[in-house]
Length: 169
Ligand code: SCA
Image (cartoon, rainbow, N blue to C red; front, side, top):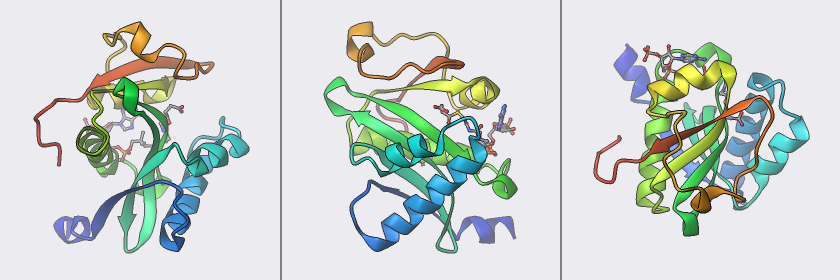
């Protein structure tokens, strides 16, 4: 039964490209973020999800978005910044968050040529990020990221190195 369900899972990555289906999924993802990240101003969520320099990797089941990650690739600096990450509440702790992160890493490496991710993690999400290979120790040289990413109050800067060869998905 589980396998049957996971067989209907689809992982996609889109920016705001004006295509109807992509916009419907991005709006659905924006609503999940607004609900799951209550401390984030809704206007800020909308602005970044719809911003053309951000992309979103989304989990789609039965053609509906159930979660996703919005990130900004800094291609010249070869790193990405995770802006938001959430799975809708009734689908959490089923492994979707882990698979989503693996799809993000694969896409970022193979499509954008990135070597690292950085994020300001919420305190309560630090455990999740550690399980996904993130560390509080930042090894990326400061001149590659300083001035690019926005610092945010109450978050802890975390880093993840993307393996250059590992098949993530
Ligand atoms: C899951 N796990 C956690 C955890 N959530 N561990 C510690 N703290 C948490 N909050 C563990 C699971 O038990 C599991 O461990 C492993 O992580 C992966 O679980 P999963 O099933 O793959 O995760 P899932 O529940 O699908 O997704 C995790 C996620 C979700 C954090 C996305 O719970 C969620 O949407 N939470 C509410 C929103 C949120 O907190 N988002 C992150 C905010 P085992 O493998 O050992 O079983 S931080 C953010 O958005 C970026 C920074 C910013 O700007 O806000």
